[in-house]
Length: 555
Image 1: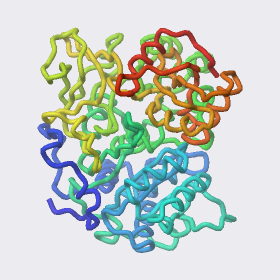
Image 2: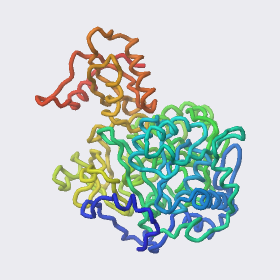
Image 3: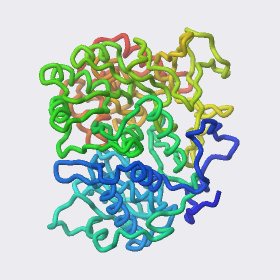
């Protein structure tokens, strides 16, 4: 394949080939030409199917058809290449909540052969700085309402203090240069090699950042072919969306779960996506589902549990599919939602490293307590520590392979995730004789709370910056509503009060340092932490203590 990406930064920092997963394209739907551009392929698919005039991107303010969205994407792509001088392979950092403008910016970035680096809107300057240092973006596109933290992060990095930053979703009074204004000065005409870059399927489309157990973020690399493969697996065989579907949900586009569910997969189906102008609450989501006529909803189990009472009271209109992922789905939540709506929830497990869902079953093939069966195109098994397949019913490590797989950007942890061609997402599972997979637990130190991944060591680092803290350990504690909550065991310095005011002070400190969802909802003051003879923190002992304890100091 001939790469079109002249900036080889990401290509040159891929793992050595011997550390790559085995990528399998042994199904007819997984065949593409060597030169393929993800965004061009999706728009072409929609227009060939006669969906050009159908609505694609919806909001309260505007609705764009596929043809109109393509014109806007072309203008932005021209602005990025001709207006800003970016070249294929340059990284573009994107920061924004779910909106039509964010979706257009992402599509234009990838269509132009650039590498999209979408970031969570809740991240603080410190966290953004770590991503900037690793991805080294050539430009940044940011929602005007979120620019302050990003500007602080860029200014703090001497190599990126002058990185061009354009805002979107602003108003006419703002002084900063806007993406919309620059795009308006460029036409929608396609300039070969620039507006639509003739990328190889193996060229890089995006870097998806995911927190590691050490708190240092990992960048999962995905190609144009990876994302097309993801479209031809779970959406084709399990989701089965159609052009009349209206999709909505809460996962951010910066998550691959949200990117797939709320942008890429609707495009593949010729469906439309609704982006709200308000922050979702469980009650607001139920009302919007009915008012908008949404037929597919994506959110985490915690949200479905909170939505159930409102759904039972008000109904869910035309909703026909409710997709749950991002954390384990308790059967009690599945049954509560079914009683409230009559809908069987569609569960699934995926990974940022794999792009999206690889184990799932459609509503008509659900088995209680199970996540589902392996998605066609993938292979999954439960193995022991030596990689040997375990018999049905035994708990072991999940191993997966298929048309997508883990390739970290310049990260030694690649060797931990991929072994002998198999991807190890870090989950413990069992499998029954019929091929259904049953989730047991995480096998690393990641805390999954209300659908968000939180690395315990990252929270520990933030707490250690508080003047009252001598040492601390952070783990997850099982929680019925959130799956897990972040629990901090804290040793205070001499003379510091172990009271409710101190708990509040530590929580507020973490909220100001990290994304707010990472703060410890419970803080326990202890005289010392369990450590090995060499001084290493024994997190397993804290997890055991957390599981056995009653709720202390919770807010």
